[in-house]
Length: 133
Image 1: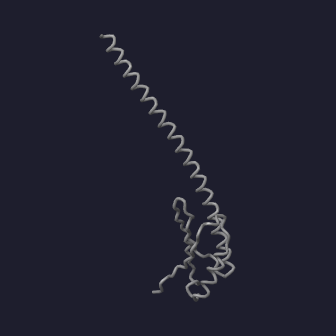
Image 2: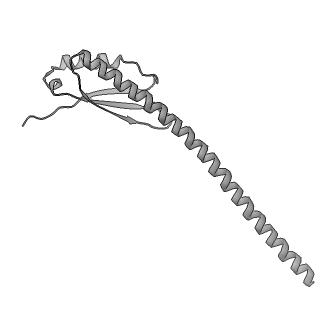
Image 3: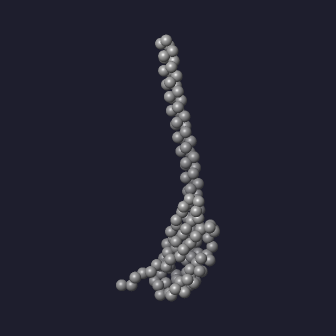
């Protein structure tokens, strides 16, 4: 009877150790999978950063053609899962304030013609208004 009790205790310990090893292995596998997902996200972020910088350079060229060299350009991005990226391009230059609405719309139309590799992405262009004191 005592031997049977010892065998049961040994079996329970063995089962506990086995379950512990399985748990450790599962955590290791999960960490590896998540690490690979992060690597994929990193590659995506680097890709988008590169095409966004290129896009800002093209916007600068268009604005320079209009005579607005050295514009300040800030581009913000909103990303949602399973949705196209939405960008807001904020442009500021002292001389842009003196433009009428038609002139601004003309520049916005020209800027919307600048190509972006991710065609489903949406852009809005905003001219910063500085208050004169």
